[in-house]
Image 1 (spheres, rainbow, N blue to C red):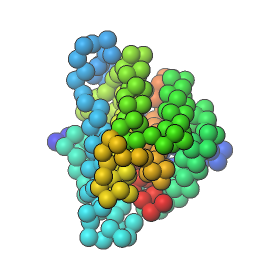
Image 2: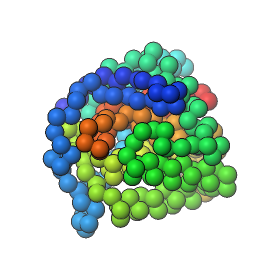
Image 3: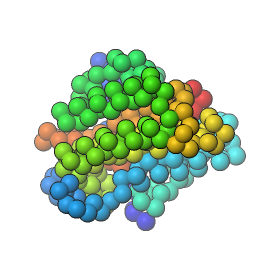
Length: 261
């Protein structure tokens, strides 16, 4: 099991539109030192669906907690979750910090579903900005057309194929960091699996391909995926990376916090 990496997340509201959760430890190695999973290779060694599977496993874990009716108790219990791939979820993120950030996440999701989202306000790289705008447009279209879970999964698969074809994929599980391309796949995975989870949650366990996606489920899934977006680190060289622990915990805690919405 990967050694636990404890990170301190600091939230800063910038111009009332951008929330940044920065890890307290500055990355002292360059992106070139990552394990390179080049997209031109015929074999990709890491299954990025693991991001979505871990996300859903966490949500199930805290929902099976005996004090699940208490959101703060679920949050604290979630710190005991340990994933075989990504390690411990016991970071220094506090309930008070998470609670203060929820308003921002809700507004951002509403912007996506209302067609008013602009990824330029996230302050990320041009490639990631383009990806997020495309993903937001895809989700809004899927919601408007009332696609089924299976139809939506196909849309996300098309986006994932575009990422593999156009982006360099770098991921380092030891350091717990991904570059833009790998993070695009992580975000897509979390969104895809989150839609399945919330559809089943609202449909008595039915998350089959023919099950229509509920708008409330899509709303929650967007909070999940864009919760991951919030946990980025500026490498200082024009590139951005995501700490897996911080990003996954942020996505999952935001997801569970909006469970009642």
